[in-house]
Length: 247
Image (tube, helix red, strand yellow):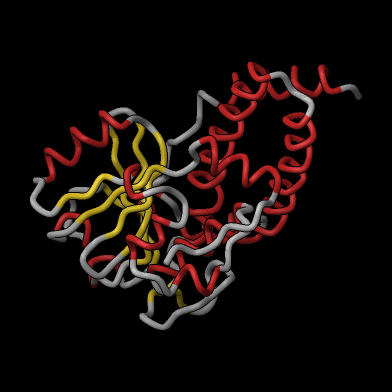
């Protein structure tokens, strides 16, 4: 199959995926049966994602600059969808522990930093899972983008946070807090906080909840956001470029 046909398939895949991308499932809306189903197909989904990456890397390598922009948009949408629809949900209900290092959804316990690093490694980024997980939250974000690309705030109210995120646009962000780290997804006016929660209200487990409920994001005085899946990050994903943890 030539690269033009492969590119065409990628383009039509992009048109289909834009309808469902960035629509996270709240953990309260997912039954235990569905969670278990997500866990059972988890490894298969990771293999499919790796095959998709390999195919897209070949297409990208032979593409024109204009085609590359389209391919990166499609890849971005695909990764956002996989995280929101398959990877995050499989982890829902996995118990939190400060020293948790689980690599398997639903088994053992997982700390907040390990949840972030494990999801990124499983989605296909070539970054040291353990070393990344052990960093302060801002350093985790800095691993994937310069400080100038971060939105740092210590005084902004939740309504102002929502306005800023909506201005920054739909997508997935890593958020660093006073003593916590997780993901924030933005889809139009819907903002969801996905994290391994140490709050009792979530039974101390991986959860996806509205950003403005009783949670560390709402209660934190310090917040730093970094939007992932920018072009440079996606190119590193395509080519499996090793990513060095920031210092």
